Length: 72
Image 1 (cartoon, rainbow, N blue to C red):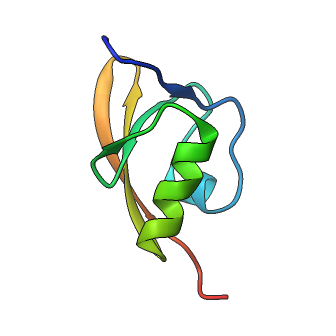
Image 2: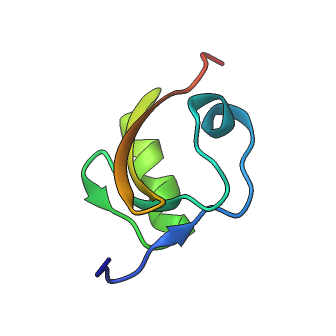
């Protein structure tokens, strides 16, 4: 896959784990915005509040993974 960078998931917990994200997944984008750093990932999550769609690659397959953050 050709990207300008990517985020490899090494460990997962909380909402991400509950949503099905797994170690070894490669995060490509959040809500259609490409991310290649943790800072970008956090900024995209902050923009969209309680819901996000994460585009990731798992074993060569592209997957959209919906995330819903709990109310505080």
